[in-house]
Length: 174
Image (tube, rainbow, N blue to C red; front, side):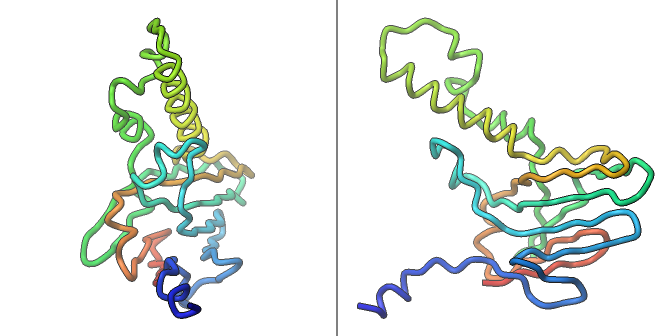
């Protein structure tokens, strides 16, 4: 019986030692102006409509300089199984919702309680996705940001992947 429990366990991506700090399953990279902590974490939306659609990285960023830093979205590329993956913009994530899940649709009248409740649940997940996504733009002097970046689900199926951050390859493996 114990054997079945071990065989069915889901392997998670863990940091692989390298030229960086590993702390609480995060890989931490530091420059003279920025601290970045990265960890693959499975994103769970409140009602489950987003959960298995994307591979996600959780980031914590801190600007330790006295200048505003520009962080373009392509700063966090993933290389997995020979394929390169770029994070989805928030606009792309929201566009992936079918039209019937849009916020404007919830304003349309309906007599069906189940349909209204389903729309409410999707709208809650959509708002959560917006709130939990990190927006890589300008990071003010002394500012902090944290949140998720979302990628094609195929990136998370790899046994090993590398996240390019500040010119360093951060490696994770199952």
